[in-house]
Length: 193
Image 1 (spheres, rainbow, N blue to C red):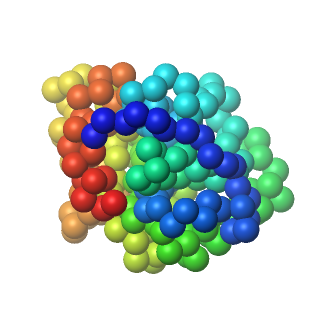
Image 2: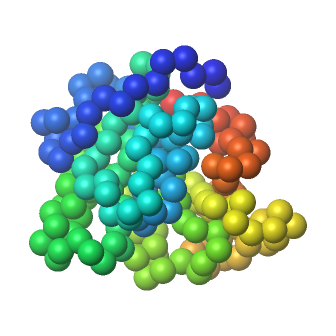
């Protein structure tokens, strides 16, 4: 897909702030610092549209990126970041839940996990949470550039076995550095929008 005019539209914390355009939404979930912003920048071939941070837990709102008035990438706040107070975590959890369970425009959830590590308890909770939402989703084994290219396939399969033992959820490797996996993902995204 050739992207011409992607733009950041709004950071929202409640339904009344969500965009009203009715466009399909591709939602990114994952723990803090798993690379959701880098994923967006890589897919749209821009360096800094989605702000990346070396400090995890920076995104505390739901960020909507309008992609050529065709669809939105929606970046949800990351979870599992310990410096957020319990009250902040509860607040963020509440508006993520409100968004995921009430937003009709969601077409696909992309669940990012770090290819280098076994899924955390929070990852497993999020996986079950996504399953209960009944929204189509895929698992993205991110940061594939951090391991040897010869180990990417087996690491992706292992991750899938841990999260999705029956193997019915598509699981793909991804790397913002290598950019070699994005074409297949664009085909998948296009099939959902």
